[in-house]
Image (tube, rainbow, N blue to C red; front, side, top):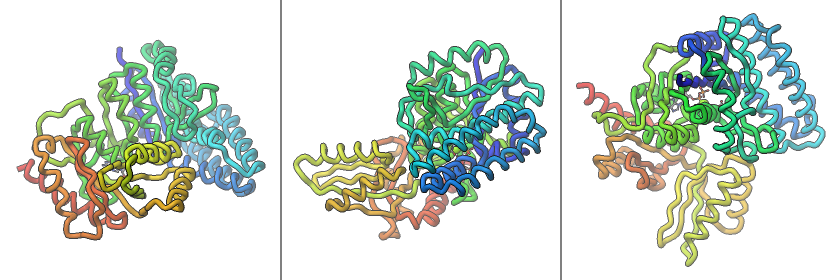
Length: 455
Ligand code: ADP
Ligand code: ASP
Ligand code: MG
């Protein structure tokens, strides 16, 4: 029998009511057992990061207050579910560990990436234990299992990468019980370094945990349960009219997430591509609403563009022309990525090079500042917008036409990033213009093609 993996994000386990809904979904989707991956309770990871930042400044008292708020929020949630006694034994050592970690950071006035990851693990560990208790309470044969038993990674704390052969081998120890009708609840976002230390996979990384575990267990399906009706035609916070996409190709999902659509973590799709597992995105708040199935290929359909994505907070690094420009630009890009930046564009022409980056860490930011001081040109305040759809394969010329709605705004555009993929086109735009440019692109291409497709 094939295993199913269900992942619940922060808002799906954000309140006692949401947890109750998630438990009902597990009962329906996993009548014969399976694997459940959960994120921290909504806001939990941010709160731990706040406590870590205070401790790293040496402010033990404030860090303690934030921990207390975190504890009471969790206790209130457990108590509203009638499960406080049930989780007490598992939770007490987890809270004690967090207090010790924060105390140590405050004493040193520093939070190392290793210690930060150990503190972050608390959020997912508490929620996974609570959710396992809830499922048991509702009659399921459910147990909490620590993901560190199987999800082996390297030691890049904060951005760990999986060690696939070790993961696959370790996951075999879970398979017999999962196939035998048990339900395991485990933590998203976390892994174990070669020396056993806890690692994290990057913010939003629980999606990646679910697909990696699905791959390692040869699962039949991975379901990502979140707070929207699947993957939508745009970010609903900028485009309230955004519509769900019932079926999309893996290539479309990969482009959208690479260009910033937050609904799935960009690293979550590689395991799906390698394994061919079916990936579904659904809404915990409306389980019977539409959902998105992500398949290796989609049947022919009317629309050219299915969705619009964007990512803000980008900087452009420009390098002047030189004889060794390609090697120099590649080395700079590799160095800043290693320091913790994401790369959104890399262009080398006879006139010079342009590298588009999003610094995610202090180290990456410092490196960019240092290069600026050394004379390289650094421009802040950029974003990328991308239009994605399988329909673009048939009509490569459309890629330029599609960006026309941006055209009247000479000051808003910083250049094209199109070219690599047959199914997307992208441009650099001024970050503060996103609020009007994204709805404008959606109106011009997605709403019109949806309207003509439904005629
Ligand atoms: P979770 O906590 O379940 O992982 P996230 O907040 O990480 O949820 O991702 C879901 C959110 O992604 C949605 O609430 C929505 O605001 C945002 N989002 C951005 N772009 C899209 C898109 N194209 N489709 C769906 N959701 C999107
Ligand atoms: N809890 C983690 C975060 O907030 C991981 C996740 O939600 O996927 O980033
Ligand atoms: Mg997420």
